[in-house]
Image (cartoon, rainbow, N blue to C red; front, side, top):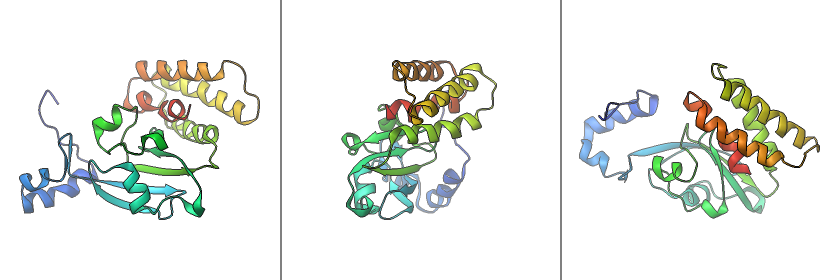
Length: 203
């Protein structure tokens, strides 16, 4: 804040304080990568062999989290994508498994760490259903203060629901992309600015 280091007083930040006090900031700074020090807790769910909470150093490859720690995909199915960052996170395909978890490294690829959700999807997962599910959640969470998020997410959800009923139309994808980009650029808060991520990344 104002160009100075800022403490975010959430549970994860507070949980790091005893370690830093006990071992010192230099030791803490040896964990992770220059852009993101320390560790991150991820909640692995979905089609992973092993689900639950894992704590990994920042900079760990997504591939290592899913295939080494979580044991890969259930029932020998092919990996399709991982939705990372919570409800307004992004779906990353196999081509992005070598991304390292970090704030900037994910942000540069249109993704976020967010709340640390990591939902593994296999070859049978329908990406339209996935996008609709997350947009439904986000639309319900919208406070309604700004038109971009309140109305934009509602329109996006309506289009996705229509597609899932088999009533897709020419131009739906382009309209979803246009709505999503407009919401990202004009929403007032972080929820709205990241709300289109699941849909845009699924496309």
